[in-house]
Image 1 (cartoon, chains in turn orange, purple):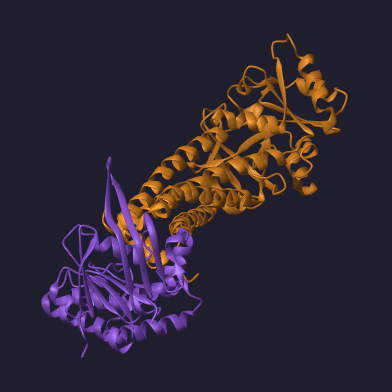
Image 2 (cartoon, helix red, strand yellow):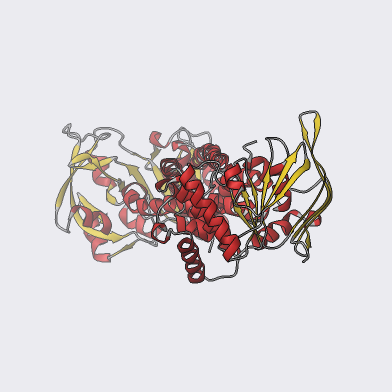
Length: 381
Length: 231
């Protein structure tokens, strides 16, 4: 600690250079924290997904749809306890920027498949009674200040009704608690019967069957049984578990894991050279000062320690600042990624990376300082 | 009285490029405690090399270097660092203060290698600055001080840890005449009033006049000696 003043003063010898290097490290670790945080968050979300649900879609593409008549046949597969379905609506409210994750469904069956969604029985009954009814998540209702009894116009860029309008009116009949399911799930459900009747096209088909099974152990067997049942038919199926489905959807965006690691890797690699160059320059400029310290009795090890600590201070402090910024940015990304928090493992990884960066970039100049020959350095050789 | 510094048959060679150059040839020298020795001679005569050997900054190629009770030519690099911290105060031609530290912090640097507390270090640094007449300049950075003042800070840094021996390499080489006189008076006072043993390399005959003994080196050998009787 008594050497702190000496190390700190050395660090700020060239203020502008130190500030720019620090900013580079802060930005790099902000990026690291965000990308790795999102990546880990996705992985965690996938791991947390339920495995007692299967998703059945058209083998070719989800948007090709499956006949509505498949529902009865799916219910007959041994091990299936409930079957519901989703059709993607692609909704927005008032402005296309206000995306509403809206799906048509059979609500009563849906809440049997999704047992962790909490809804009042009276709301479910109201949904059955009201042809244009909609159940919305509590979060969505809160966001747009909707309450039960409101009629809300939801626009869609995909579906037009038989009158040629692409704005559909729905009556909110209830809300549900979706916190146990997590981010990325539909938050606006309406009756498929109404949708199928009113839509100008695409009638009689649905995008996904959601199949609740008795036990996750049977997932593979039931998946194979379903796909075998519809093999060689006009509408062949592809059955996946919930986690596989989400992973497939995420892969459509690109391999997030690969992208995150590639960007972070490239940034840190560049940063390594930048920091090493800064440290090397700093030591080169201080050759005579380091020689004076050695003259005064600072041992080779102490001089190495001083330079290395300087690199550590620069890297660890800046990296910590970057990671703190990333942690603070996470709540801002909530509308995009849902309820994510900076995973502790990412902070740990960040600390490890900062130490590694300090060691790799600080060791060569520190070693050079250690090996400095006093007589040659003082003579300017 | 036994000598504080003893050099016996000391040689020093350097390899420069493909050539081996012998700078010192079998030097024998004794320096008594309390002496103020001026080493003089033309450039390349080996003055600074000899000073470096006495100060433990370099090792002889052969021969013995004894300072106090220590055979410093036998010490390892690490042990030599510790020894320098305890026994030697350095004053350089170009002051060699750390530009990022204040005068007081510069003076405190050698004390970082001791077990003194922060408050003790600070007090001793302030006392040393007071001794060189710069008590009011402690918070100034070196670039805010004149050459003479910087050299006085360097003297304060050299004496703050109360070393056995002060070694000075051209301490007035970068100063105007008036500043040079001030510095030499200060070194003389340290020698006379505090009994500090001083070994000084200089080209300046006026600076050498402050010493109690002058040694002239030529081509790596002791050529001439002049002893002054102090009034």
